[in-house]
Length: 109
Image (cartoon, rainbow, N blue to C red; front, top):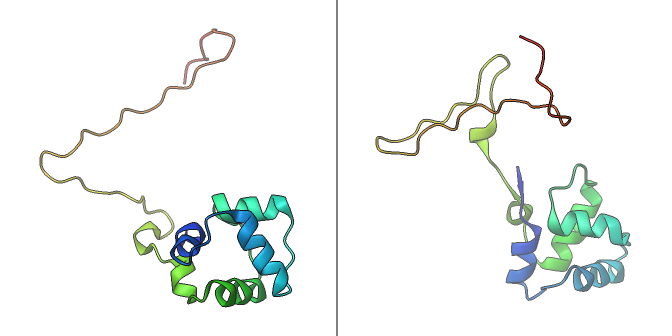
């Protein structure tokens, strides 16, 4: 799922996290500045369904406006999530080789 709070809030004319935080508090949902920052600028790890109800009421939106499904990210156990590139697409990215911070080489694999 992709968290879409900022765009949904912007569509309702709310441009700052503090504006949304005040509106949520007026509806009984008091959120700390740290949690509000996480909701506003990131992907929340957890969120109560009751809190989602209040957010939807304040923004006048549906749950589908806040949570966008991303079914292409779902894989079965043991299956890699591979994306195919079209002909003429970008070349695959080379593997990252770990390096020690002190400059010494790693032991042989």
